[in-house]
Image (cartoon, rainbow, N blue to C red):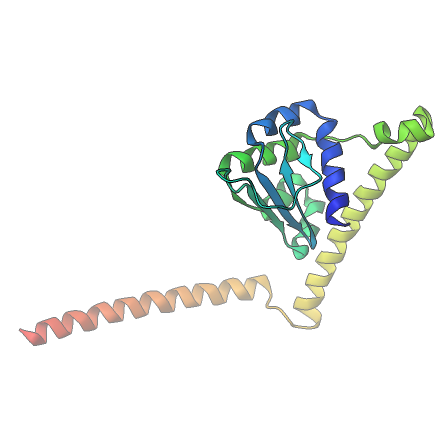
Length: 198
């Protein structure tokens, strides 16, 4: 999806939720930049609290820089575990107030595709299409989660490209013990050197 198209979609989503516009209005002039699994774009919040489709220029002088939202492609599979699991993988940097509002909006914004399809399909077909879309998205997320788990199992057990979680945990514990032993040895050597220097 191109940056301009993603900005237009974001603008439509926020325009359909006046409460979200109210929450973004105090941040007018600030920029939101995102890279969500390779889908990148920027938008500037306009005076109405809507993402500005003409964004891309630098924020106005004196405005705080805004935020940058990042999600790595390999973390997309966590969407199958629910919204909270996915949000733990999202990195939001920049203005803390704007980041907090974006998190709140993402958590509570529930767009209904039926509202968008009704003018073209009518109420009944739009509702059926909306149900189909929701079911398709849920299936895709579940299939993605299953594929990610199968890929991880293959990488660990069949191809042996990654260590098993138990082996990695044991190795980590052994390294921690080695570090602690090394620190104790260094402290003993320092005490011996001080006693010999007297």
